[in-house]
Image (tube, rainbow, N blue to C red):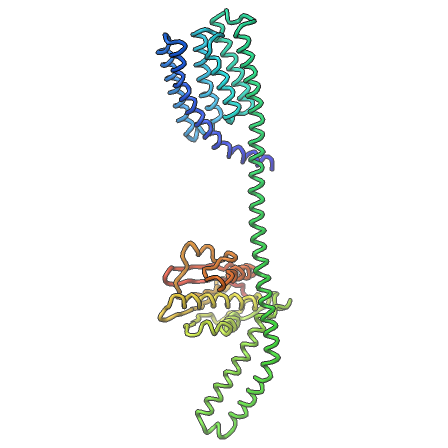
Length: 441
C-alpha cells in the first residue's frame, strides 16, 4: 500500500513541481533583470557588461522553461529546475569575482536562491544539499580571484558562515516540506478512499431503504389481499352461483338481453376473483415463493396487466410473445417489475397526449434467456436523464407523485435473476425498457 501511495504521490507531484518551477523561473528572470538597478547604483562603469550577462542568463532560463513544457522536460523537471536555479548562482559568483570578492554585496543573492530552493521549490533533500554545497564552492572560487578576501577576520568568513547556515536551513526546510507534502497527500488519499466508501454505504442504505419500502408495501397489500379473500370471495361465489342458476332459467334462455346481462355480470365477478388472486400472488413472499421456481411470463404479464388495468384504460396494449414463455425465478417479484414498467409507460403516454396512446410488450428467446421489452409512445427521456433513471430517489415527477425507487428496485430484482434492466429512448417518440430472464429447467 505504501509503495502504491508513493507512486501516486510522485505522479501528482510531477504536475505540482512543474507549476512551481515554471513560476519560480519566471520570477527569477524578473529579479535578474531588475538587478540592473543594483548594477547602476554599485558599479556604473560595469553596467553594460553586467546587463548583457543578465540578458543572456535570462534567455537561457527561458529556454529551460520551454524545455520543461515538453513531455521530456516534465519527466526531468527536478533536474531542469536545478539547472536554471544554478545559472543565476554562477552569474552572481562571476560578478563577485569581477568586482570586490568577499566584500561584494552580490553575495546576498546566493542566500536568496538557497532559501528559495528549500522553502518554495519542490526540491529533493539530496538535490538541495548538492545545490548548497555548489553555491558555497562557487563563492569560494569567486573570492579566490581576490586573495585579500581570505583574511580570517574579514567579510569572507562571515559571508561563508551565512551561506553555510542558509544551506543547512534550506536542507531542513526541504526535508520537512517534503514530509509535510507527503503526509498531506496521504490524508487526501485516505479522505478520497473514505468518500468512496461513504458513497457505497449511502448507495447500500438507499437500496436497503428501497427494499424496506417495497416490503412494507407488499405487507400492506398482503393484508389487504387476505381481507379481500375472506370478505370478497364468499359473496362473489354466492353471486356466481346465483348467476349460473339464473342463466339456466327458461326465462333467461328465451330473453337474449337478460341472458347477455347475466353473462356480463358473471364475467365481472370472475374478474374480481382474478384481481384478488393476483394481489395474493403479488403480495405473499414466502420462502417457497421467493426461490427459483418455474413460471410462465405470459401468466405474470396477465396478472400485471390486471393490476394496472385502471392506469392503462384507454391505452392500446399489444403483445408479441413466443409460444414458450416458461422462465425461472421469483414470479411475484417479476409481476412487481412489470407493474412498475407498465405503470410508468401508461403515465408517459398520457403525458405526451398522444391521439393513439400505445404500449407494446414483446419477448424473444436469445439463447437461454428470454429478452422482454416494454415500449411506449410517450415523450421519451432526455439523454441527460436516461443515464440516471435507475438511480435511487431520482424522479422527474412532481413532489408527492413518486419516490424515484420503482426502477431502482426493479433493477435490483432483474440483477438478482442474473440479468440487466436497460433503458432506451428517442426524445419525442418512444421509450423502451428491456430486461431478460433465465429459461426454466
